[in-house]
Length: 277
Length: 293
Image 1 (cartoon, each protein chain N blue to C red):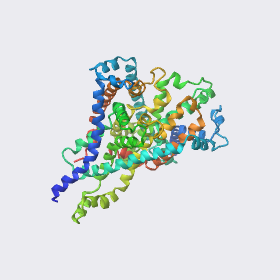
Image 2: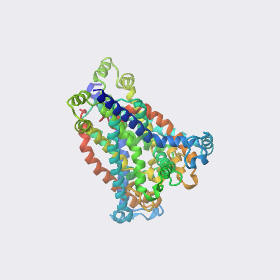
Image 3: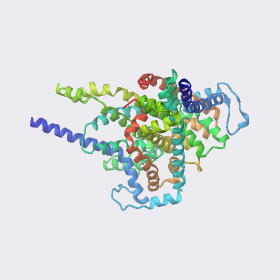
Image 4: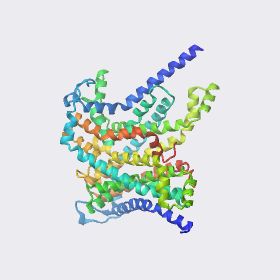
């Protein structure tokens, strides 16, 4: 009996070590990027790689000064934030209508919305590029806000819809009996009750917009370019400074990484349109 | 207002989202269809004219076209295989409680939140560089010759980067799904003397069937569109070794300014994505809307 028990314990230990090893391996590229960002350029190229070194903030100082990091960060904040606000303003009423006043066509409309996610960016790249050019919106934050919002809108509608569906109709009916109109029901009953769900929907839109790279690379050059485009500019041969690349990468990813950690549970729901709970 | 009129009014709340999405889809798509039958080069904007299916003929006989399809299929297929198989194994590994479980899960899902341009450049320069990358150091330490990843195995390198980005997504979904598994059933099976393998095969895998379908569908949509990773690492090369359909359309449109050919290619990408998604939506669409009235 005791040998069976100790064998079980051994297995458990092996599993723990294996799980930690896999977790460390997956995280290693990020860790390595973080470490490199605190090295001098010389240390960054050094072979064998140094795990222990005197950390320096020099790269961060250079990036903040020379690469005009704040300009790009501000573009990221404005475009991702703007897309989130625009998306929420449109998605919440739609989800409300779908959840509480469904018609025969609602199911079809929801599936159709999902199917617009399957329209590949390249399929509409040329017209969007030409439209933006003709409207004088190339390299503008407005264009990115609209595009990011449209790209994420189906997910947002679906996600909020699944949250609303879980809220009992009775609560809304009670408010209606008390004489509240649609606007009041939404503001004072529905939104407070579904605050958590709405917050995670907005968060997901923020994360996806912040990391979006296809449209920001193709529709911007410098004026409206967000952080993903700034990082891409380091791919040119003359930009090959690893420590600085690592510093700017760290600055670009850190806020989203933290948001992602905080919201992982809710994200599953959004990313799978509520199909996996 | 009567309650019926009110219901009607409230239904209108869905209109802004529906109309905006419809415009977002139909306007560019109609323009793409129109451009695809035109000779239209941005360098010679006044020379546009109707050319019928010539752009399609050009695109389909373009030497890089079939390479780009093969690359797209390989990229999507390999990444799906790695993420689904790896995702199932890893999520089973971290499902039962162990010390530090929460931290390990955070480490595992982190790559998903790294933006594609950062992921690609970090892998290319810090890990896969043949002279001073981390992998080169491991190879040298083991007495092997370092691999010149992006030069000798370009497509494989891109696949590795993209798989690293998407494995966390699969883990995230599968770990969540495993939490809803019936523990009692599992314990009962163990009491009856079922081996770990039997439990995995007869209980865990069937339970994960729908999550696996969801992961395949969501990832397929995103993987058919991989662009930034290729843009910043190989620029489609060497030659056309890492050119997938999105990248080929991009080079036609914004580098060669051939709007007609790019539109034909773009339409092909739309058809390709829809073939994949019709099949996949059939597979899981029913369960997605099962709760809808």
